Length: 271
Picture 1 (cartoon, rainbow, N blue to C red):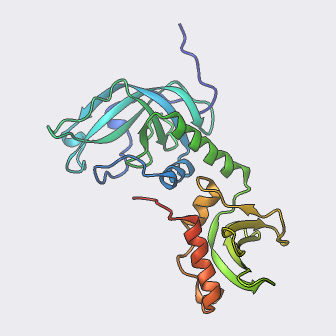
Picture 2 (cartoon, rainbow, N blue to C red; picture 1 turned 90 degrees about the horizontal axis):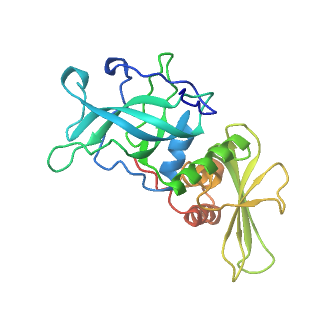
Picture 3 (cartoon, one colour; picture 1 turned 180 degrees about the horizontal axis):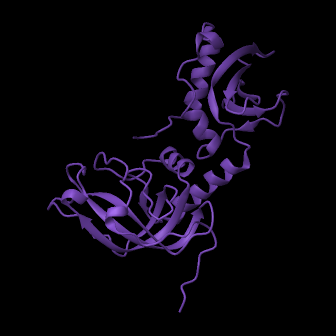
């Protein structure tokens, strides 16, 4: 019986171990994702993201694995794809790649056959070979993790979330009530379209951190919610201190900047 073809992605063929692409350099024993920022980074970087079950894993040694880090083993993995989250075109049901795994206390690699995984992969070559895009690019399958990946990719493709390059200018205005103020920080973006970080302080209320797109800043400004692509691009790519060229010499404005970043919380991205 002919095997069904999955609806999206590139067709991958079985390859010999010698033809597999070299994996990304291995580093450190902890390959699990630490939080949303790590997940977003993988989701944005991977051309192909799939759910798959490992059907075969052969350990490579000697000349077949000359650059394996201490405490790791290199496996040639064959996996059956059950679901495609992201891909550039039609894709076959089987793929193959290299996986550098941490050894256990007895110096043995984990039992890989039968594992249900979420894999973040490079674009396959013409011969069908591919690779994990980083040492943490294969994770145990988790439906919540997959939902987060889908949400990040959907936000990216919508084009509504700016890619933040920094902050170019800012100003602060006091309100009519003591303790009331609003600071606006004009962000530098990859598409050069307007994006403004708005920080509103009102007595007796929690600080509001908003982002406005467009030349007019009004009620359409969006509150920054944790666990979103907008939050990731602000928390992980804005400078910790307001640059002098953007108004950092004004103590009140600089404090609002620091308070805004504190409200966003730490990026949490790990290497």
